[in-house]
Amino acid sequence: MIRDVHIGGHITERHEYFATVIGPNLNIRLLYDGRVESGRSYDRFFSGGSEILLTENGVGHTGTGGTFCSYMFGVEIPQKDLLRRDVRNLLVMHGARYHEEADRLAFSNDTAGFEAYSRIFNTGHAFINYYFFLTGDLPPNVRTAQETILRVAGKFLKRHDVRAASRDGRDLAHALHEACGNPNWTLFLVKIIDAHAEAYHARFTSAYASTRNIGDDEQRTFDLLARHYRLDPYQQERIHLDVIYEQEDNKRIIDAYKDALTAHLAGRLPQFALLPKLNLLRAFATRNRIPRTLLDLLDALLMTGDRSTKPVDPPFVADARRILDRLFVDCVGGDLEIDDLIKLMQAKREASDQRFVGFESVLLDAALASDEWSRAGKSGKLRLQFEQIVNYFDLFDDAATLVNSIGFTDDFELSPNRLEEMLESRQAFEELQPGLFEELFIAPLERNQYLSMHGRRRIELLRRGLRASDGDPGSARSIPDTLREANAVARRHRIIDGMLKRFVGNIHEEPLTEVEKEALRVDVENRLRSEFGIATTVDQNLLDSVLLGIEEEFFYTQKLLPEIIAKRDLVLRENFLRSSGLDLFRIEELEAAYLRSLEQPPDVSAQSQPA
Picture (spheres, rainbow, N blue to C red):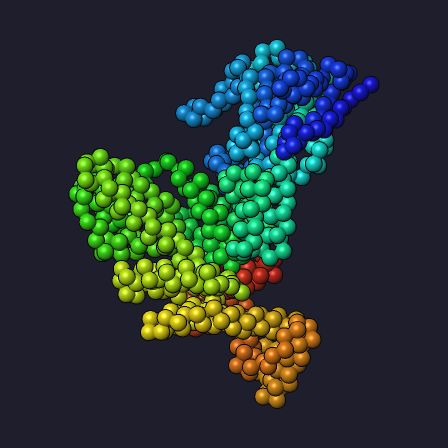
């Protein structure tokens, strides 16, 4: 007696499918019809009034069942699903409609439909989607049958890790049939694959895994590959974001960012505690070369979905709104003053620092509110002003990303193209007001306590190089070399630090004599040459810097931190942060490791958390 049937095939040269049928008393002649007729071909799976029809243009369906896929990062996800860590998948039941006011699903008997492949892979997963239906001793009414299927299998379909399924989907089909809990039901599961997008995903995953970064030249190669595979830009971008998100270290940071937002929405994390936590995670993200786009998407998806209270504009947004309303609403046709542009850029800086979601929407609100755009002789001027402001916003984003990368990303390469981009941005802001570029992009980093000492060194070198280029424009060409040398020093510092902690663990217990220091310096030089291929002299200042950092870490974890926790004295912590060479990122790492080492019971841990 046949209990399961598995069929694989190609619908088009691009679209592949695997179908699995599981149930009692199967007869292949009553389940499948594949035809090639004049001008059309299709594969059809059917039973008991339900069917899935695979054609060259898309997928048709009728009867019970629905479609599901793994959520990809960056797509629009219902807020209820975003707030739950255990929800992994998008599930759409045929004939179901969600009523937001009543917060419930309503089913109908109208379950027939047809989706083109472009829609399937743009609204679902970028290259793997599933269709299914069930037959057997279900209620005869389709609406009631759908409610039954959702009640029995909905939890599995929303939470099961479908990414882990085999490529042919056979193991997933057996797991789903078992989850239904009724051996008399027959399951039809069809897995549809966009083979072009799947191949692109594999290539991009391999390239990203090797360096955790895609350079400009490599990106141009992938753009050519996407055109070769006929991927649209949206599908390509979703694959990029998903690959970056799924990298293990990245995922921890991004999930922590999402958890902070959801805790705030649930009322567990107040606003004053939310922003520092988000800023910390954004600093981690920059160090890991995670594009800010991923975190911006979470801001937009989660924070804009909180409509429980009408938000009040903070002062910097109110200032921006007044300027834009004057231009586009109150005094249509007025001039865009330089002071107004400066204030808008300063407001955008404040919005960026405070993670204010949707600052650019203030500009859009003003433009849409204007009822004067159609006035003769004024619509053109308004459009130019609007475009000018948008261009400055884009310049701001590009410059901020570049400067932040120099500060937070070790070994970041300032290529000639990036340098030229930065100089052009700086010139645009300096024309508005001398010193504005430093005010907007360099000074905020200097105030950032998460910036490491090497990052501060790079930012200071950048500042000096840019200032020197004011009198000698050609000198700007030396900035990349200067930063490259600073990165080399930082790299040696990291290697030596790890080396000493690994091989000379008790070095912090008592000061070394000058003779011991010299012997250590020579030993470090030899190890750098033999183990890392770095044939360079180790400067005594560099060695002293490493030793000082190790001593400061030892002092903080063994002496100062226990006192801070016992007394709950955060002033001691702030004083140490200001006076030491350790950044806040490193201090929080030490604190987390220290608390883990204590293996404190929950109540004690909770008391020490403020430290």
